[in-house]
Image (tube, rainbow, N blue to C red; front, side, top):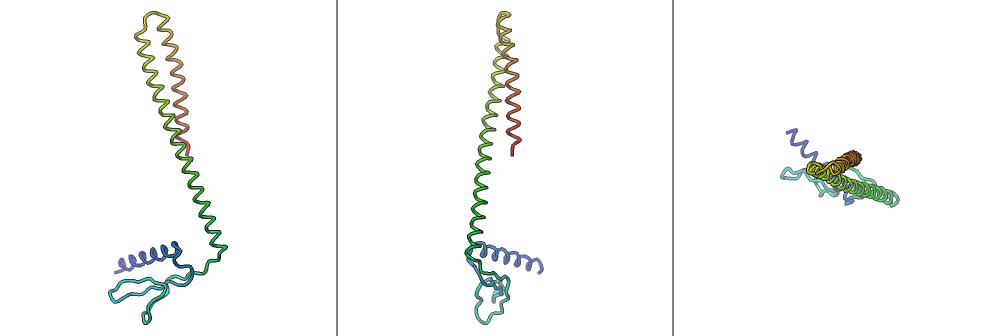
Length: 152
C-alpha cells in the first residue's frame, strides 16, 4: 500500500509541477482530494462538500519578476543555441580534418606504389622524397585531427 501512496504522491507532484510550469496557475492554492472511485484529484477549486487538503500554495508573481524570469529563460536559450552552433561547427571541422587525413594516407599508399614501380635511380629518389614529405604531412594532419577531437 505504501508503494501505491508513493506512486500517487509522485504523480501528484508531477501534475503540480506541470501546472505551475505551464503558467496555468499564477496565484492561489492547489488542493488534493479523493473521489468516490478512490482516484486522487488535484484542483485549484475543489467542489463544495469535499474534504480537500491544500497541497501547494502559490504566490502572485509581479510583472517585474515575470520579465526577469523571461530574460533569464531567453539568456539560457541563447547560450544553448550558441553552444549548439559551436558544437556543430566543431563537428564539421573534425569531419573535414578526418577526410584530409584519410586522403593523405591514400596519397601515401599511391606514392609507395609509384616508388615500387619506378625505373631508374632518379625516379625512385623522387618518390622516396615524396613519401618523406607525405609522412610529415600525415603527422601534421593527425595532430590537427586529435586537437579538434579533444575540443569540447
